[in-house]
Structures are given as C-alpha cells and as structure tokens.
Image (cartoon, rainbow, N blue to C red):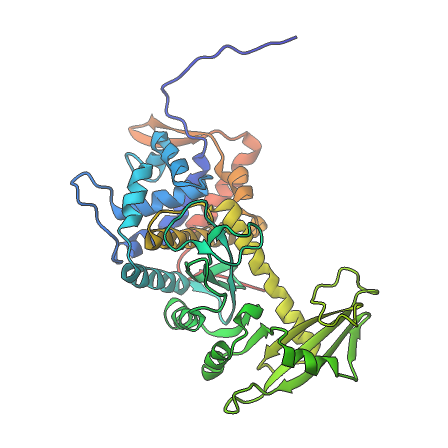
Length: 437
C-alpha cells in the first residue's frame, strides 16, 4: 500500500550542517582569523566586497560540507543558518571565489603560504618530525594554464598538473605544497621546494628524517640533504649500474621467510661525491606471492627487489621497516582527492589554481588538528566520516530571552556526546599538545 506524506513548505531557515558549530568554536580557539589578517590577502575594490578572511573561511566551509567544485560552494549562499553560525550575513557566490583567487600571483603565493604554514606549525608541539616528499597527478579536463601532457598512469594522454607535496608523518598533515605543470618530472624544483619547507614552513621544527620515493633519487637532492646533515631514506632508481651490482651479490641475510637484505656502498659517477650506503631487499614470490618490488632480472623471475639509499646507521631490516611506513602519505593524497576536492577546484589562471590548491591544504590541516584535539576516539576518521558523524546535524537559530540560540536536532542519548566535544574544544589552547605516543 502506497502512503505518501503530504508536502508543505516552510520559510524557516534550517541548515543540514548544524554540527559545523563545532568547527566554528575550534577555529576560534586556533586564532587563524587573526593570523590571516596579517597576510597580504587581495582586497575587493567595491564597498560591498567581501572581507578576504570571510572568503577564505567560506571556501573552507564549502569543502568541509562536501563541495568539490566552486559551483558546489554556491549552494551555501542559501544557507542562512550556517552563515549565522560563522557570524556572517551571507556567504560568497561562485564568482566571488573566482575573482578572489584570480588576484593571487606567484609573488603573493610565495609570501602568503609559507608564512601561514609556519604560523600553523608553531601552534603544534610535536617535537622532531618525519617529512615525506611525494608528488601526484591531477587530471584536467580543459586547457587550463600549466596543464600539459605528462606522466598520468590513470588517464594517459590527458592534460594534468603535477603538484609537489611534503607531509608531516606524525601529525598526518601537509607541511608544504606547490602546484606544477603536468609535464614536469617528480624531482623538478625539489631542492628549492625542500628549502622552502625546512627554512620557512617548518622553521623551528626539528626534522628528524626525510623519506621519498625513487622519483627523488638524484645527486642534487641527496647532496642538499647531506649538506643540511638531514637523515634520509629514499628509494633508489634501478639504474643499470645499480642493477649490475645487485646481480652479482652473494651472502644475502634472510631477515624473515622469503625476505633477504644486503647493503653496499655505491660510488656515484661524480668522484667528488662520497660513496653512499645503499640497501637492497629481495623478496621471493614463491614464498610471498603478494610481495611488492620490481622484477629487475628476467632470468630471476621468482624475485622482486626494492632499492634504497640512506645516511642512517641502522640495521638493514629497520631501515626497510621505517621506509615502509611512508606509504601512509598515499592515504593522505587519496583523502585530499576524494574528500577535499583537490583535483577538481581549478581555474584558468595557474597561480589562481595554486592559491586554491594551497588553501585546500590548510583546510585539510585544520580538520586534522580538529579531529586530533576534539575527537579522541575518532582522530583518524576521514572527512567523509566526520561529516556524517558529527557535522550533518539539522539546526536552526531561534530567539530566546533576547538572545539568539542555535538549536541542534539530536536524539537525547547523543546529546551528552556532543556536549563533551564542545567542552573538549573549549579546553584547547595554543600550542596544541600533539602526543604521538
């Protein structure tokens, strides 16, 4: 039997994201609004122009509530209650974001974002950190500036951008990020990117280890890290000279069934460069069918190999295990693409696209800090989970005793849980304690 409820409409402003009041309270505790006002942000030319801090915060709000394109952010213009939660009369339109980001240039990006990242990591007391460098591919559907045909394993032949990123392993956050044209190599501009990351974004933070994949295996990068006396573990490319050395190796040390290791010192072609410690891990596929690694030798089809270079003086199996935990940065990139619209917020101008790209990184870091400080039992949940778990709560503003009150539609058993999160947020102060125990 079909029974349909009758339909009526109401003018009462209701938001489906009343739980974003949690994020508003947390942003207040971080003081990021005040910090944004110290930066060289573009101002509007009209008397009715939006405050640049409001544009940025509204952009983050759009991302946190599920937007993956600028047009999705436009829907928030109709959410009067959500605007009231964040203290605004209205939220910007799609064209406002386009005009705002269009005013960013290379010089402004270089001035704004390292300073903002520096301030952010000053708010976190974490001690020595491990920095993972990686690159990814952002496929573009049009002919946006900087998009070009390059390495694109999923959509070969399509235009793309090829950003460079640095992650702080202990906090699951982004230390720095650059957007690059799609036809650049993984290691392109990496030495300067490392300099900006260490000397500006993470200045004052002790970098205890650097990890990267084989795309960063160059003498320039290794030499720059050695000049800084920075410990590193980087996957080595299987060049012909390295393969020849590995092929003739004997006396392998088996560390566990089907896994054997060996080390040697490889002398680069440049005689001025000292020989570096290299490590090879050999995996026997007959005993470990799912083993990762490369088939280096056709006459040894039962073995997969992984090569590494390091300046650490640690046991071979420990070096291998330390590097393997680097795979978590791939999860960060996946979350950025799936939940934060990293590969979809794109404008025609390259520096405008980079500005929105780097503000997405800040939005990601703020959400990471929120889930660590406010949600102890869910501090590894993705944004999609948090959105369904505590942000997607119906809410409206009512007048009570001459005061505006936010009403949240929550069943009684869940209300103490929500109250605990608000109390947890109110107890947070900078610098935020970030235990990695």
